[in-house]
Every structure is written in structure tokens, then in C-alpha cells.
Length: 356
Image (cartoon, rainbow, N blue to C red; front, side, top):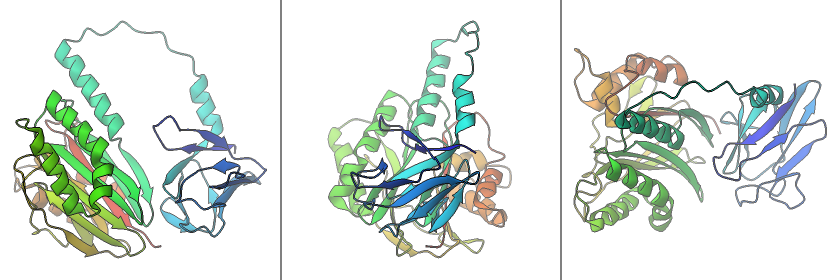
């Protein structure tokens, strides 16, 4: 099978590289066949090659390790769809022949343009934009696999979930605008663009929320309110430190039971009042623990005649009922009854801790 590596990045740096019979070394060194110039990548990090009809990856004893589908490996056979994490970079293994067939498909003749009124067009465009910014996908971080399920309602605003590496930790963030419209959409874009700067300045999730809150209140724009969760994941210590602003903290599940259901939801939403204090929580996680981030729309969509109407309670009940399933199946089952066209954005992120 002819396979290729694709850098999972929507920036202009996205590229693909064939896996061939001649081994290719990936690393930070200028002499590397596949060069990723970042401090998180060792000079000679790992190598890829094809042999006997299969494709393989081998770690070179790198500082930060090589992960395949969230598991740290020394040498591993690859298959299309596998996700490889090298430092801060995420690579996807693809079947070259299938990709080429897709690229070469003839363009279908254009049908007549659907006559949509302006509101319907805006709703469709908003949904496309939000799905591009927060795609439903499976992610591999060091020590953790994350499953993101996002169904935007199609109104401007848009929940968002993002991750990035910072020193010895990974930052996980969730934002949920409390209103919809142009202001909410622009505010969501501002938060997403500036989060990395704020976290780098403050380091701690609670301090980060305080800075963001100060920035929003100083703007002096009415109704620019956002609920949020910011968390720091330390993979070497399997420690999660998080802080919430008007949003329920992430739910921590161990052996089928949610451990922190009664935890306080944190301070006021961002942008409501200057000088608001936000507290931090630290949890020491174990292998196979699961952590769930979610927005208010999830609770509203799960509400039925037996539901409490409170997001965390309803979600916890469903998570415990489906705890025996693997992470992907559990999330699918939890959201199975939610509408395809929800009144509010649905954003549910499930993370499972995996062995070092």
C-alpha cells in the first residue's frame, strides 16, 4: 500500500510527504529528510519507511517521544487514518491512491443555484465557518486522546475549542458566547486569536481568565459576554489544572463514575464585571480516566421529561449510563438523541488518559 504523511494543519504550511522504501528521517536538523523546525522536535526524532507492503515509523529515542493514536511507541506499523504526534505537530497517514482518486474526480456539472433568502444564506455560511474553526475530529495529545463533537446551530457567534502547546504543558480552552450575532462572532474570533498570548503572559488558567475578563470589560461593549474554561494538561505528571468562568468545570470520570459533579461553576462570565476572581482546580488523573468539556447547548439538547434541566446533571447521568463503551461510542450514544438542527451550538469534548 502506498501511504503518505500529511501535516494536520490548516495554515499555509500544510504539506504531504510520500512514505517510500527509502527511509526518511524526520527531525529538527537541517539535514533531516522531513524537517520540522521547532524545539519540541529532536534533531533526529524518528524515521518512516515502507517495507513488505506495509508502512512503519520508528522513534530515535527522541526527547518528547513519538505517539501513534495517542500511544507512545518505539516502532509501529502504520495504517491509513493513523494519527502521529511528533512534538507539537500532528501528522495523519493517508492512502495515497485513495487521495489521488478523490483529487482526480471530474467536477460534477453545477446545478441551479438554490434561491435562498438572505437569512438562510447567512445561517448556512455561519455553520460552515464554525465547523471549519472547530471541526469534529479525533485528536492525539501526549498522554491523552481527545474526541471533539461539534454541531453549530448556524447562528453567528459560535462555540469553539482549541489546543496548543506551551512549554511543558498543553493548553485546552473552550469558549461559549452567551449571545449570537456579529458582535458575538467577532468576540469569539478575538478570544481565539489572543488566547495564546494571554496564557503565555499569565501561565495559570485562573490568571489567564482574569486577564481576558479585564480585556473584555475595558472594551466597554454591551452584551459581550462569554462563558469559558481554560485548562493546562501536564502529560508527564498526568495532571490537569483548570479554571471556569460561568461555565461548568470539565467533568472527571473514573471507573464509570463522575467525581466532581458538585464542583462550583466558577466566577461570572467573561466581560460582565471587571476584577472578577476565578479559582483553580487541580486533579491528578490516572490511566483510563476520562474528562469531558461541554457548553450549555449540550444540556439543553439532552433535556427530556426525565431530565433535570441542569447541564452537568443531565450530562453526568448519560455519561455514567454509557461508561462501558469506548470513548467514541460513548459520545455518539450520549448525543444520539440531540437534534440535527439544534437551537444552540452543541460542543462536547471527551478526553481519555492513556499510558505514558
